[in-house]
Length: 353
Ligand code: ATP
Ligand code: MG
Image (cartoon, rainbow, N blue to C red; front, side, top):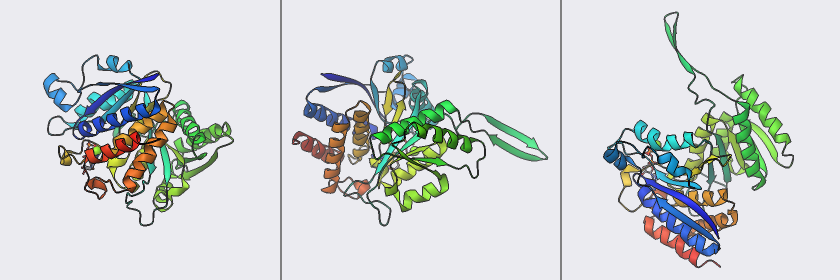
């Protein structure tokens, strides 16, 4: 029996509604598998926890989490209770940093039955690998005054180590997919970091002769996401470019409520964290209509991460059959509840042969 120990942190808002739903789905999948077991331990770390304890998680919170294989997180943030910088830095960003989750991955795929904002969407199925530790989001820079002007300088930092790490991750992913990696660049305008990024990309690509590669400037690439998303397989991007592309990817999928994500610790030293793209969705808390698909799809990414790709594929196929048959929450134009959609997914897992 293979056991995966998961720390569940539902967090705030609809996180508390969709994490239990996705957890039930994972239990049903483990039953289907037969020799796989999930051991979930739930932690109430959230803004409400902060009000009671003065911190988003206990002092030894990271020590506790270290013992798990993965972290399954819902959403963090409740502006009515705690300012965002306190809640995010006290939990989400703390975990990402301390556990060296240096890569963020987000698939974008159009599910049958879900309306994309694109006018004529083809079937697209891609995944963005975002370098998540350095790049444009560095803390090097400053403000100066010169000739009576005020100037802000922000330095982008690109190391060979972090760039190669993200690129290799992208190539390894592409091996299991459609064997195509696109690099997001801007070496026609950014003259130090991007030519370096391009050079490293070419070098890493040589290690993977079976993978097709191309390199596109981020502006054209963003436009292409809208006009021809079906042309992409794996896209590797710097921190800023990846940030923008992944939001665009989630948008063309039809709702932020279905978009999954993972923060990966590449060397396996610490647990990786699986959390959907959406936030706490304060406007729909308690109504029972939060879309559970983002969290369920995030569970599929966790399965993939632990080498259970076949089970992950079964799950996504079932989710897609559910949306295709019109089991949709209001954010994607339906009138079904979180529970109805989740129950339908579970029923189809239980009936799967
Ligand atoms: P945060 O600061 O936590 O990211 P946010 O308000 O910026 O919160 P979301 O919480 O993602 O962002 O909400 C953005 C919009 O998407 C809201 O209208 C919300 O209701 C909707 N939304 C987010 N998640 C879901 C979901 N799972 N199901 C349905 N609608 C959702
Ligand atoms: Mg937000």
